[in-house]
Image (tube, rainbow, N blue to C red; front, side, top):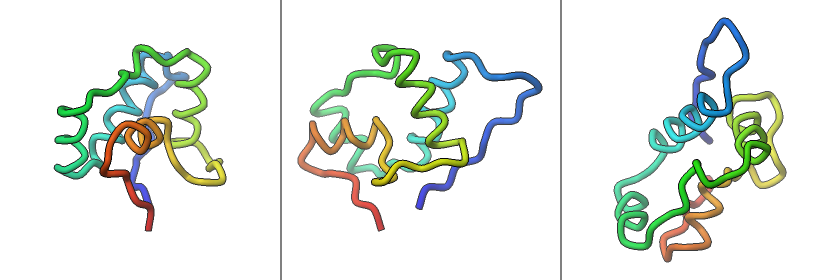
Length: 89
C-alpha cells in the first residue's frame, strides 16, 4: 500500500504542482533497485505526459478513488521498461 500525503494548498493545484506531487510521492515509494533500473534503462518523464494523464494520476494518488490495479502511470512505465517490476503486496 502506498503511503502518500495530499499536499495542503489553499487553492486547486496547477498541473505543474500535480506533476511535482506525483514525482515526490513516487520517489518516496521507490526502492534502490528501482532507481538503478531507471538510471540504466531510462524513463519518459512526467513533463511528457498530457495534462489529462497528470490530472488522472494525481487524482489516483491523492484523491479518494483508486483504479482496479492500484498502479500509477510511473509504476506502469517501470514495469514495462525494466526487468525489476514494482510488486504490489
